[in-house]
Amino acid sequence: MSGAVAGSARGRRALGVVTAAVLVVVYVPLAVVVINSFNRSRTFGWPPAGFTLSWWARAWHSTGARSALATSVEAGLGATAVALLLGTMAAFAVSRYRFFGRETVSFLVLLPIALPGIVTGIALNNAFRVLGLPFGLLTIIIGHATFCIVLVYNNALARLRRLGGSLEEASMDLGAGVLQTFRFVTFPQLRSALLAGGLLDFALSFDEIIVTTFTAAPGVQTLPLWIFGNLFRPNQAPVVNVVAAALIVLSVVPVWLAQRVAGDAGGGRF
Image (spheres, rainbow, N blue to C red):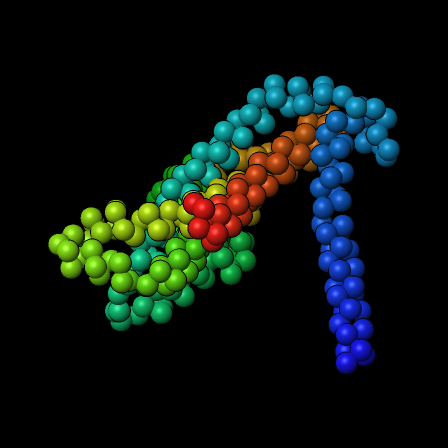
């Protein structure tokens, strides 16, 4: 028994060491980017030669960076709205109705998140050209929505399956229609899952670059595209560092909020 306990303790310590190493490898470079955004030196030597806010002021007054930020926010909000609508409808259909091809529909909804982004981007690019749809913000939103739907669909489907349909059946037995039941019974129980999915969708859309490359019009840039386009310009290096730091924060906050919303809902506090 003592040997098993000792082995278990060693296993926990080993797992802790591996976990700590992974976290260091992932998050230390991100921390360096954020610290260097305040570095007085253009060469970003380490340790920092001093700290300054001048690069942040320069980034704020950069027309290209501000335009790219606005495009990223618009694309993220648009893709999130489309994903919330279609993902919820698909989850409701799959969980509450039985029809031919139901499993196929579920598979097709989940597939885009598993495909390499370059494959999805090429496929969408060809489809838009065949349809004659001009490239621009709309095509970016459609491209992002293809993989954002998955997060809403998974969240809503899991919540609907956990809830069951007894309350909805009781509502209909009392004379409520489908839409009325969804509004007053189903949606209040789904809203935390949808909010968490929407926040994750926005974060996923905000920093997406591969699909955006194939669906954006020439000259239209999101924040990740702007960073990549200016990454190797020496005079833009400090501004790129600031924008990268801002992108980290803008990506982390929705994920943190989604985790809090999902955790509060699980604890019954939403």
